[in-house]
Length: 186
Image 1 (cartoon, helix red, strand yellow):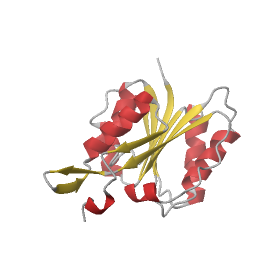
Image 2 (tube, one colour):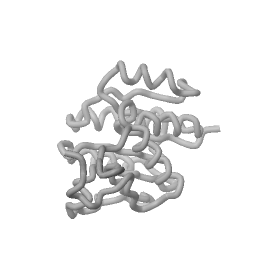
Image 3 (spheres, helix red, strand yellow):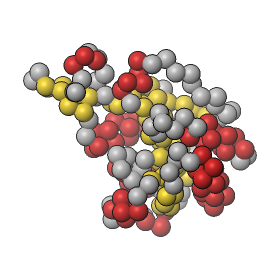
């Protein structure tokens, strides 16, 4: 039985384990990625490949993104859960997604888990204008520190932190640590 329709932006790379997890939980998962080879690698990991759809698009191209998301929604329904890792170089991605979600009638709400870089934790950003029924959560990616050394998080650590945040429905999560900032890896 399907849990609904999930969207994972960045779901073939750093967030591939989140994509696999959502697929295993029974979601139909639409995955935005830029490279076919990563999508094929992802497909080797999933239990139900028939419940995954690739959206190969450069999300910097807003019109192409809008069209691809519209097709995904028309084919599989509006998104029930969105996990979005979007670089700051593409500020139109989240507003475009939210407008589409609002455009397609929703009888129930949806969740948006916005994955952000550690530096964005220190920048005051406005929360995007959320449509009715949208539960918004921020997930900040930090670093790990041990024995006086620091390193950036692995993809596995990132995915585990995101899955934990989704499971507990936290409004804000820091995966790893962000402070003391001056001790981050360089």
